[in-house]
Amino acid sequence: MKRAYQDDDDDDLESLPPPPKSKKRKREVIDGRVVEDWRPRAETPRAPWCTSDHSGSANMSTWLHKEISDFYDYVKPHPFEDEIRRDLVKRIERSLQVAFHGKQFFRNGQGSFQKRDLYKVSSVLERDGISQPGATEVVAKARVPIVKLVDRVTGLKVDISFDNQTGIVANKTFQEWKKIYPAMPVIATLVKQFLAMRGLNEVYTGGLGGFSVICLVVSLIHTMPVRQSNNHTADSDFGELLLNFFDLYGNKFNLNTTRISLNPIEYVVKGSWDLNGKPTRADRLSIIDPNTANNDISSGSHNVVLIQRCFRDAFKELQRRMAQLKACAPVERKNESILSVLFAGDYSSFQWQRNRLRKIFESNRHREQLNAER
Image 1 (tube, rainbow, N blue to C red):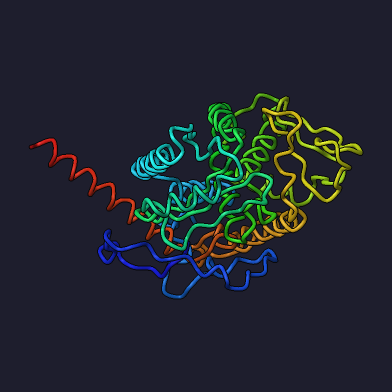
Image 2: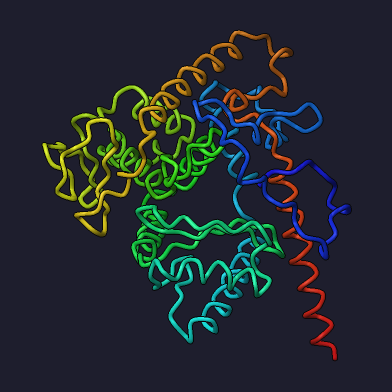
């Protein structure tokens, strides 16, 4: 959801978040360029994560590492945002449990429902004032059916998937990997943002989903020579990891012949048959679900050839930008950005969302304090 930038004080919590754009509007062409909603605008900062000048770093690699850290700190959820999201899940859970007479609803956004329940869920959440009117979309024909909605209170986008518990196990796997590969969340966050800005992050439209991105990052880190030699300090260089990611999956990885396994972590030959018993698609990325060996978690990403081209271009652009800045005099590169070549955009709706969640959190906390004093 994108909207024009406004100051925090201008946002009335009693009003609805801005409605999504009409579903009848012609779908934007996805060709690898930054989509309209994310394109930079003259009146908003292009690189709002750049609050520190790293141009005096010892080398370009150190500069890139520091700027990636800044970017991650800017976009990662704050503790109050996590609390608001947990409250949203509880509100959805309570609503559906009443409507479905106590049927179990899992707290990672997945429910033990059937496809026929999708439209009932959509109407129930809108009726109960959770989903913003006109902002609910049922995607019934996807491999994993989902209901997409915008929360009436927070403006947060929510995807609820059905008859599918793989995400519950995947979340546990993600938490375990975070401990083993501390750099993984950082690189995965940047890659997911890179894809989102180009409209290539939604599986049901052929993009690459979040867990697939996480698997790619884990596979990269685990198979890097420095990791194999037990030099684990080297895989904490965010700049080197990001460049290696774009280089590997943009230039070197062979979609036609190679499948990625995460349990154990290794490359395997695709062969003639896919994991589901159908003939192998040479132009598709294949990642074996680390928790379900016969499930290919990236099989629906039919835009993967375009994604691979975007990764290849990103590697070139980062290298070009680093060489350009290295050749500049110190005074000329002061307060410049490396990542802006890939991530410059309109972050006003992102900042609006954070401001709104902060106001909701502070309002809730003030209400709790008043109740405690009574």
